[in-house]
Length: 287
Image (cartoon, rainbow, N blue to C red; front, side, top):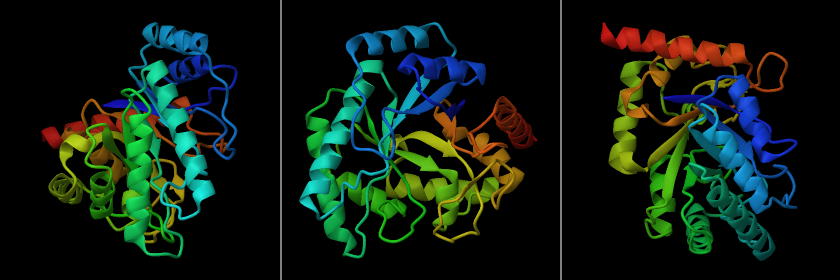
């Protein structure tokens, strides 16, 4: 498992690699621009080359880009749809430029409207964005299920992929907090096995390409997206020993998006804790 963290690219994309290396990350996740603004950051080919050089010289094996939070690919507002498409294309082009393992996307929201048409609208945006970019995968993140968010269940993730014609560049990033909050029990090795069997049957194991490891501040099935540090929430240390040692997760980038002790993101102690939980889980599985 490529355990890592969400880090800042402030000062240049390559700076994110430096920050990830300081945490002994095997994977990192970045925003390609401010996550709460539409205006894109003007990255150049030189920026991409410097990022690739930094990666080659580091122990970081995978980079994920997280798309802007403002995107709503399922919107029925033409202006929001147009902005979402342009921003998603920008993220995928940067992913192409730096050799990212994928762009992670919250699929969108139906707001108060019906879900099925929103899924169809989102699928059309995905098709267009993929058509205008080269090879970077687009990874749909499961959601905690608040309001009309899309991707709250494996069935909805399947329907979103189907709405985009099943494009092979479409994958999934599973978030442990979102799974738990949306009603998937990941607190033991046995319950996690059942969840992943369901995912495999509904979506397909080959679509799973990345992970977010976050504990949940809120109870099972709460439909609330509130991250906690590993072992400090409702999933607990047993859950993360199981999650981080799950054999079907081997070799996947697994990024912590936890608040950290000072609310500035995960520290090296948090990453060391994750690695220790994985080792403990592997020992438990070995008997």
